[in-house]
Length: 133
Image 1: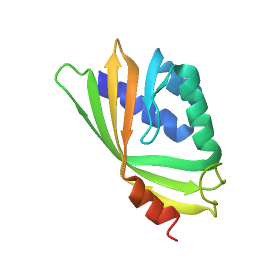
Image 2: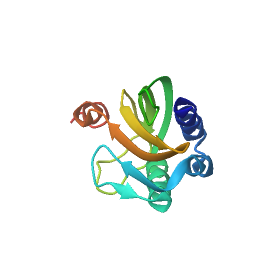
Image 3: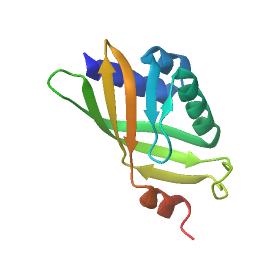
């Protein structure tokens, strides 16, 4: 069941378990961040997660999942509780800003593996919280 795969993804995300996340993905997984270019492959996904976790501490909760009829797509809405704890090059200075945002991610599942993740969230709302100046 595809929703089980996505649930396992979020459990691994909350543990910051990159190996468990990568095991749930196809070798050519496509990662579509909210802002930026599509990244293809487990190696790129690993770098994306390591970079994010080097600057942001995030946990997800209140996860709602919906699958289409053939379960090839799973949409998720969830609450992110985060802290921007280390300045990321190209972003504004970190002062341990806390934030909560409500993103949506759409997963594509094939043969029990995640083949694409596309994230959506309100960047302006996030910036208003962590960089209100």
